[in-house]
Image (cartoon, rainbow, N blue to C red; front, side, top):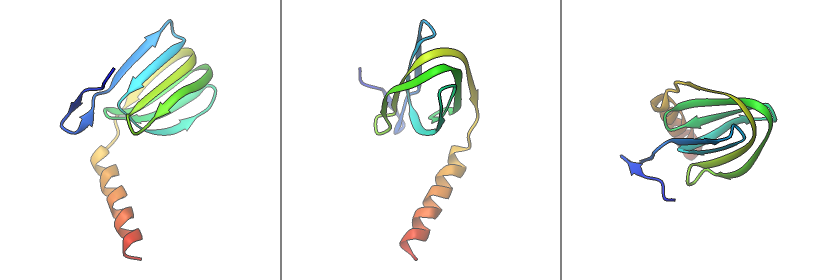
Length: 99
């Protein structure tokens, strides 16, 4: 299933099956992961997933895809300043080039 792209960014979609399987598109970065909590930077903000017995079954950050299995008890979005983060990454790249 191809992901749609609008304005150069992959659309963010989230599909939960029986609170046990989760498929997410539009994933930019895996911030943290353990058996009870996963934090992801997505195209639309920071996503925190809470639950039990988590296992990431698929991760492809080039495509922005992530699949997760385990008991899902909570999903929470919070904003992320993508413009600020992008500027910091660009400055870091320039600093490495001009060392």
